[in-house]
Length: 298
Image (tube, rainbow, N blue to C red; front, side, top):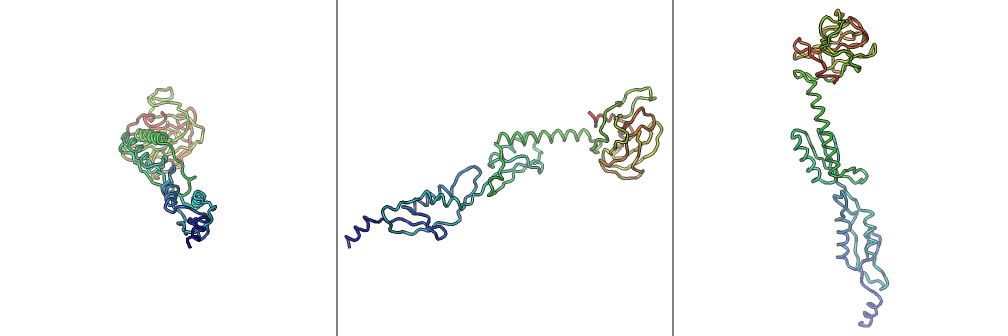
């Protein structure tokens, strides 16, 4: 018996056969050491954005006596298992006022960016959203420096728009829309041979028939010929704010009609006391005309 055992151990050795899905994929010498390889190379796989790694199934091990010349192939088995592993990637989106601005690889970077932005404007709405995906191509992130600059640039744009909105707000009424695109041909307050007093509005030259839009919501209070104003549309916007649109060639609204910002109310013309096609725009606050360029065309 001793002799038989001696011959067996001379010709054979004990190693583990490894199976995946019932198929033999190779041999290993030490099961515990191989499990450490699985943890290091698969389950604890470290790479950019990797959040979690799952393997399709755990290997099956069976101790066998095999010929001494039988080689083990631990690395090849690991490669086979890596082909079937599922990797979940994680990244973080930064939102400002519910609009996605940029993405970064980790939560710490996202938090650092939002904290820096809050120091500039603590009232801005910022949100960090975590994303998990199995599609690596879906990940479009930037470095913390690039992402921070993009977020700060967006903040500057929001601040500029806020200032523009504030500039265009009178008594709580926001003048949201340019009435017409054109060139200023006569400014507020200037004198002219065709006027008996200084100019009470702003003249914007534009081709005959160019659509004229209501600058904001309101109710039409006049739409008729009005002496030197020619065809004149007046809109009451509430809170003492009123806009007048003079010299129009056509009027598309009627007294009492409700209009929204951007609605076409008339067309550029040269009716009344006029030297060429243009819109005469007046803004009145509590009955007193003010310079339209405080709010538009500057």
